[in-house]
Length: 374
Ligand SMILES: C[S@@+](CC[C@H](N)C(=O)[O-])C[C@H]1O[C@@H](n2cnc3c(N)ncnc32)[C@H](O)[C@@H]1O
Image (cartoon, rainbow, N blue to C red; front, side, top):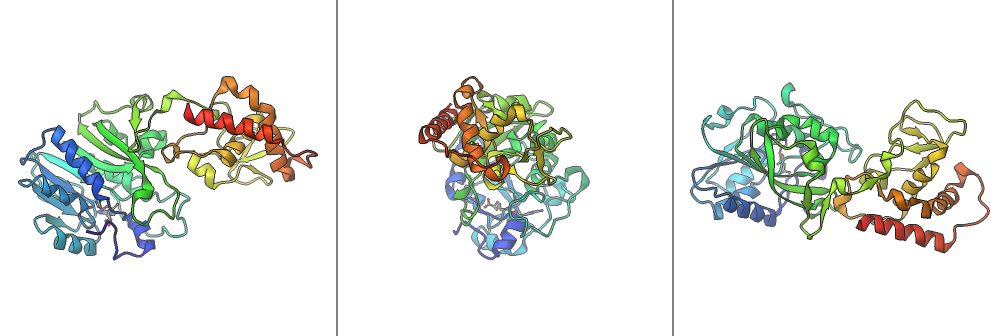
């Protein structure tokens, strides 16, 4: 079976968030289900099933009831061809989200699997393409279809939820808060992180971390944001990281526009995460809505961010992190980052006589490498 929605144009794939799951991740889900002794008594539902990649679970789980749903009737037609044993629905998951609309009994043991559509309706990426929006009930409305899907799974009271979703839903505080009704009721019991570029046809965009996550329902005793900050995450490449295990430069400077003004006006573009930094500008000449006023006594920190953008080769799984650094060792490169950024942005800092020395550049690069390996 082909891995992606062949019947959709690139524009519609973005609109429906229709990037289909590679088989190897379905196999990981299969393995976890073994570990947790899931047997034939469980109903397995993919509420946004596309062509039905997850129904390959049938190879292992032969006696289960399977339910598929997708808003896209053409995808459902395809799925029916591949997986005729599934009971299909063609509903919008985001309205009237109730078990009875999918013929599931209140006491039925339910596992939700799948790969919800990710389509942040406010994000900068693909802004020219994302136009249409799907109707959502107020109680599960968010700015992203994937986060709304998480709230829908909570409404369906699935006992287990085994899905792929952007790691940013967990690690970015604002996203975590949008999904709080889900996280309050679910614990993360298994996971692995991989690069979004593994999805067919998404290599045009910058890779971001996706987590394959197995959640178990535990009402009002779910995962807290503090648990997430201290959790050891693992990637498919065998790396691991803890968010609280590093220091971040944003702790010491302002990331977002505010009312602070200084005699010497230096402006910096709003700082979001590392992936956003790679796409955006750093020092800017003109005041605009995204401009942050730089406190001149902290200029070197901003120059460090500028150098980080220029030199850092960041692994994909750090794409949603703030810019990391090591405070105690920063003094050793402070003059170097100032020199490099001032030379790089002479339109802002005025004409600079000397270009930065190669030793300066190497010192900064070494510091950044150390920060990344930390
Ligand atoms: C990322 S694809 C995943 C497909 C499949 N689960 C897989 O893993 O290969 C997301 C799917 O969500 C569907 N979708 C988007 N919005 C939906 C909604 N409101 N209700 C149901 N399905 C929706 C899209 O049509 C698309 O097929």
